Length: 424
Image 1 (cartoon, rainbow, N blue to C red):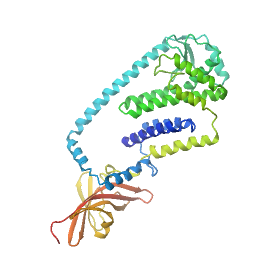
Image 2: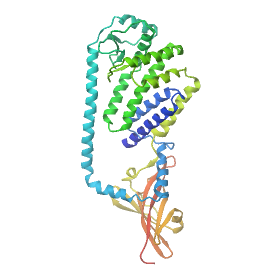
Image 3: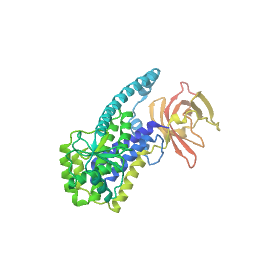
Image 4: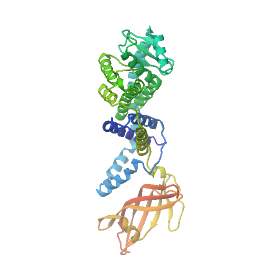
């Protein structure tokens, strides 16, 4: 399990979906965003690496080459900082855990208090005089989910609630058999039909656990917006495009009346009104082409960002025993580290000489070392002779590319070969 890789991929999916949503809203089917959000949330709950050669994270190694090598940046100071902090790693972990725990308790308490307030409103609700008529009307529209219809004096617009025991709360001034009332009821029923309150519980759990992550709060915000847009469009698909203007006016009026909300229930006026009205006015039935686009776009985003790279880290190479080969001998430098000694030829190493650091040293970059059916070592002690001088140094493996079909592993090594003091 590599939760860091999963965490990064899910984070990038959030950012890509928000950017795509900003610039493609109204130009692609809205269901695209719903699918992307579902895949993003699912990614957080599946801490498994799915490797792909098409993963965007493979670009890391290209950028690393451009930034570190082409610009000749010295990152040795980072290793020095890491070495200086290593004695305090356990203490830092305890401090970070304590900070996380405090944040988790505070955020959880906020949602819990709001939850208790919403539950109390539901408990205080009374039987609705329109209960039978509304249920019969829903049945005529083939909407047969068993729900409660109640009246509450604590709300001023209809709301839906519940995961197992579901229902709709109506304000006392609610008038049945008006076109506007039917639209609002259908909207709340769609929330119930697609278990949006259960989705809300999952989102709250994500927020509480990952409260420190700003992208999680963005996820929470935009998923709620898109759930409301989803319900709006489902209602219009039932009632027809001719009612979208009336529906938009109804939404504006309800937004003006709304005074309170809760994590326990969803209401008609919740979320960004302007964005929802734009979606309502752009509503039209999905074509076959739009359906194909709705599959291709999420599939592309998931392939690029929900998968991880095919390169192995040094951590994954730790503990691998290097089998002795011709002209090579195994040197064990530690319990979790392996290296080999190689005596090479200057012609073999010349293509990988990045630059002459001084008159007596060579900087080596991306020296390739290929092995089959096993992983290459983490480092190699490399020795080469030129013009009677011996050059030696440690080349460290930066990354490994894998061809699983051929069981071929290519290690890419970098380091500096220093000239011996005396000429041979």
